[in-house]
Amino acid sequence: MPHTLNDADHQNWLRKEARAQFAFFANSCHPQGGFHVLGMTGAPLSDSTQVLHTTTRLVHSYTLGKHAGVAGADRIIDQGVQYLLSGHRDADNGGYAWAVGPDGFVDGRKLAYGHVFVLLAASAATHAGHPDAKTLFDDIDQILDQYFWDDEAGRFVDEFSQDWSELKPYRGMNANMHGVEALLAAFEVTGSEKYLTRAGRILAFFFDQMAPNYGWRLPEHYDAQWVVDKSFAGNPMFQPAGTTPGHSFELGRLLIQYWDLAGRVDETALSKARQVIYRALEDAWDKEKGGFAYTLTFDGTVDVPNRYWWPVTEAIGALTALSKVDPKPEDGEWYRRCWQFAEAHFMDETGGWIPEIDSDGKPDATQFDGKPDIYHAIQATLLPLVPGVSRLYDEVKTISL
Image 1 (tube, rainbow, N blue to C red):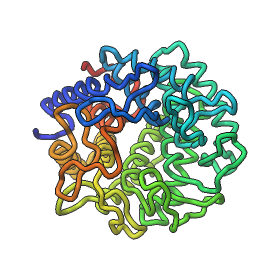
Image 2: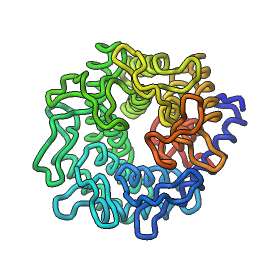
Image 3: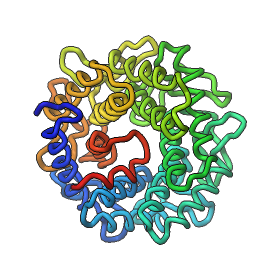
């Protein structure tokens, strides 16, 4: 397959891949509410613990599917919204628990990372016209304002105890990056400048203060005063040590989306996005085997060489955005390289993407059970099919799946 962004055959191939992904994850609905995690062939896994970012991402993803004409998408959206309100929501303390099992909360911590995804899901459900979207949106908006948004810093704090009595001193890029994503979606569906302004403040910190001072790499971890903590190492998936090139791809694309929504007035935005994206491409790509190393040290040396599906999908999204608004020949070369690698190693004929490969390029399972979610891969598949770089819920209506 000649993976060229605007090639008709490539676009048809992307539509076929999108249909396969939506069909695979349509089996996610759990009969007792919420969602199953699916195994490699699509059968539900036995572990019934449901994690907040999975619930929310399915609502977002199937809102995209609904607008692209996917049959049955409303069922997934409704199941997710109802489980957010009845399963994850903490009726005693407010907010949304990170993990829920059949007998209640498995992990009741209140994480900014999870809560900004609730805002993303609420924005998606609003755009989809779900009858309970306003209830969800108003609730999460109030929670983010009351607890997580630090207006003095212009960023989100990270983690509270279940009853909100303890705020951890850790501050992180990951929650704020996805906060930008959710804030931009909220702006797109409500038109409220509050969300666009907050997204811009977060982006300014990372692109104006952090990236230029760290060789266009983005530090992930900070203390309570937002001083970089180079020694921090937390959860190996969500808070690994060092820098995470996959997040540079994501945040670079989000800067382009913000620039577009803000009227394209910042003449430096595209240059900054390109420098961050290309620093990560060049640092993390395995020149012998392909794929992106998961984490790097602060000088760009590979730290954790494991190769997961999601950094490849995010590189595709970032390169797609650059190719639309500031195209250069190397963007197309990297775009083809990423899709070729994904097709050879991560894409699966049963639907969904293999989440991890070993040093020989074969499926591995050191971090994930089954196929974790549709979110990363479906965005990589849909973004090249739409003409713009923002308002994806509207733009996917031009796609006929």
